[in-house]
Figure (tube, rainbow, N blue to C red):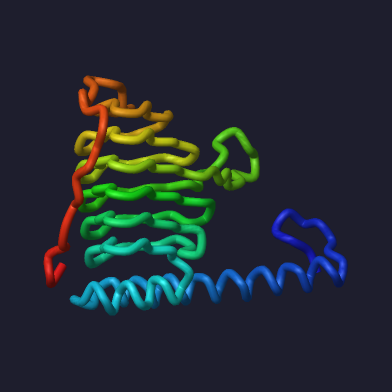
Length: 197
């Protein structure tokens, strides 16, 4: 048997490929189930299934309807954090979201991309870290390897390709600093999520 590049495979390599394909199919099935779970109009039911599939969710945090996960086992969400409708949370590498983080609707957070310079178009996976008290506006995109500092704000529609410093307000494509938050100590709580979202 040969691989797609024509290389002759050993029996061990064939077994490894079969195992990898089965593991991939299992993960894809789990992600499909979570997509349907995301349509259930109950925060408690969704949280139960998300945690069952490996998402670490802190006390008082909510994921609104329509969330899409890519490998939920590497996603951790702190306390009192709200994830808006139809958010994409990529767990193909570590995705760490802090406490009191407000992520608006249709935000996409990715930690896997393709190497455009590689002839095999191989994936590159790098963790994404979002610290406490961050606000990410609607339809923003966070790309692999980004670290967003405490209290930072990402404007709606921004594409974040580089780290964002603490208390910075960034916007645009690619995102650049446009202002600063002048808050030294944060103490707000995001509060209760809307019941049927």
